[in-house]
Length: 372
Ligand SMILES: [Mn+2]
Image (cartoon, rainbow, N blue to C red; front, side, top):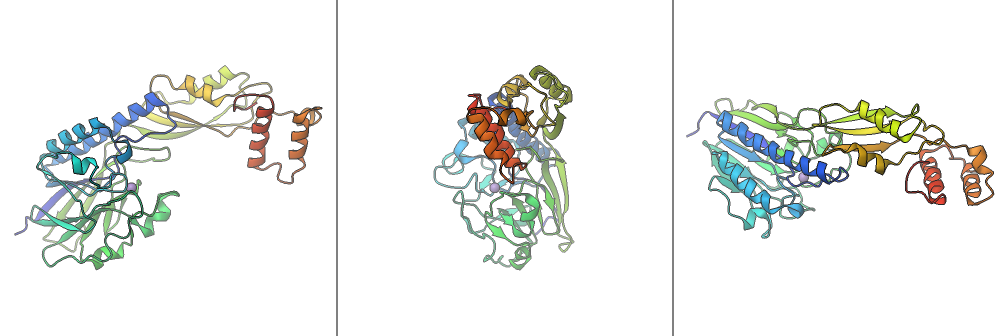
């Protein structure tokens, strides 16, 4: 017998313990704390709405980086959900005998799928079928050859790349467990609860909730978990899906023109003025314009000064150096020879040759990697 409605909270790609490469240690630590807060809020959402289950579409944590504390945190939080918690491991938290999933004890309300074949769990009279990644890469199509056994409406829960969406999800997103949306109904599923793509996406057949807390720059827009309401009195109707915004940080891209800066301290001032006051906005600052004559710019030094406390800041140096090429090409040493060789190239104005010019001159002058 079915209970007419099923309410689920669905999240994925929390990436607990992520490295946050390039932000500096204090900021990265703060961001990892925010990942935990995000999952805490996901659980709280399930508690608040009295969800029938909390589903996790993989990449809950990062296997290679998982810390001992992560286990205790997850055990406590999943128990607190006080509803069934169904976890379908992904490529970052793939199930293997040494994984947290396999070697730790989990509260009795937690079900971790441990086979790459779909297996069934009943939730409030509904059938949820989950499958797991068993390796960090090279997982093939999990859904294609599966056929849902006869019975009531069935919902799939797994981590995978819907092929039609790859172009939307940015470059560098690996094709883990690829499948196409049309396979969902072909297998006999009514709907699929997904993980892997970090941009939230809701279609009539599937939901990618996205990561509940931004992991890299460019991940703009609301981040959180999906709240889904299924109604079996209208099985042909799609579930109602809402993305609840739960993140602590937001990410922002700023452009700062440093052409008017007359010394390195004024570059620092200029950036600081542009930064939002709210320290929970992570900023990627792109420096543009042309450096004034004699003004030195050392991005490493600048970042160290900008990252007061645990602020999440990154710098992209896209400004042109001030170079007196007429003077430099006449230098009677390796510098002159180097500049003349580059100037003779037909692609001298290209970005890559300009970057080589600056890097080469820095090297010849025995400077740290920095702009002149
Ligand atoms: Mn993934």
